[in-house]
Length: 212
Length: 212
DNA sequence: CCTTGTGAATCGTTTCACAGCC
DNA sequence: GGCTGTGAAACGATTCACAAGG
Image 1 (cartoon, each protein chain N blue to C red):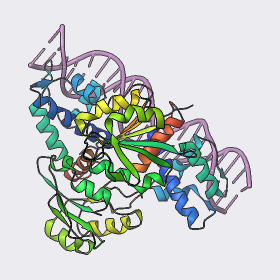
Image 2 (image 1 turned 135 degrees about the vertical axis):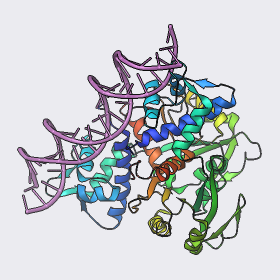
Image 3 (image 1 turned 180 degrees about the vertical axis):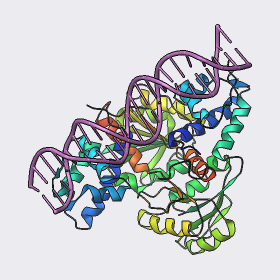
Image 4 (image 1 turned 90 degrees about the horizontal axis):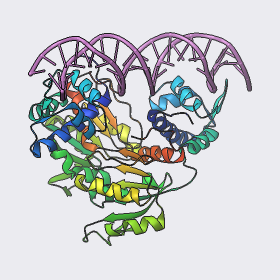
């Protein structure tokens, strides 16, 4: 398969969200232009993004909202549910464990882990926090595909090593430190402080950073 | 001023974090190669990133860790503190209000707002939650530069409109919906579900997405 | 000799523009 | 007539490669 840009995948995710709303509000078809406006991009961009995966529209008509939703869900791999574990049940880990936006999209939180005995045993939205020592055993049993790391920076690399060694093939890192993972493991990082720093740069150097 | 790519700014933020650690561990100088390794990039990339803003190194020697830290802090606009308000004191808003990573970087949370009376008055790390109705009045008084939105998707655009109209010039959006802001307002979005979906795509289409 | 700083080359993404089809 | 799908052109970011300087 061809290489797909991350920016393309990110936009597909946005398109899908808009299509779901659009379908709920009773529309049956949509044009690339309407879809573009929803995601702050251009109609050509929308068509190009989709063209990597096939042709889903009808010339002169646009796209069938329902069919396109299904197609994008398939492209993103969302026809099936994904199992997620969260490591680190501090403020952010706990917030994510209870975040509705995950579950509604087919991501099931099947385990939450912490090394602090005071947190072990507490319940977060139906899932109880388990000791970090059980990680390997649980991964072997539950086979989660994705691990979300919400541990302190110092602990993050060690946890990433442990979960990937135990078979997890995708990591979402909220710890404010870059992680190295072995070839073949998908990795993404969300760094809240960096996001604020990019905004600070934008405010300081008015206009140097193209505003989205 | 020249246009600076967002990716450059993001890397500068990473370099700075590493430089701070590196300085703390007693090193006085660093080469572009060492800095590159820390951030998962190349020495040429590091030098190019810095070259947009000046020349900070000595040929044959590398960079003075302390001087480069100061230079990057200045580039990012971190010599001065920034005031931040958080709108929405649900799970994620509350977690961010108490997140140490913000305060240690010079971002001061000066206000937290919620429309739910049950949450108003509760204390989050020393800042008490105030009613959303007070937003405009407080912004006029406290002059926060940045607003972090942790409200539900349906409410996000209205809050963005209110805070920008009241004078906030940068918005960090955690609500899972794209926002339109007026020209001249810096905007960034963090969408947790999208991040998981990018990972799901990576897992589904093994290798199509270049793994970072 | 080592490492920076930077023009030039390469690579990748977005935009353009239009042929093809409903 | 209107809108998609897509090569080609334009643009932007990264990598290369080397001259310059400690």
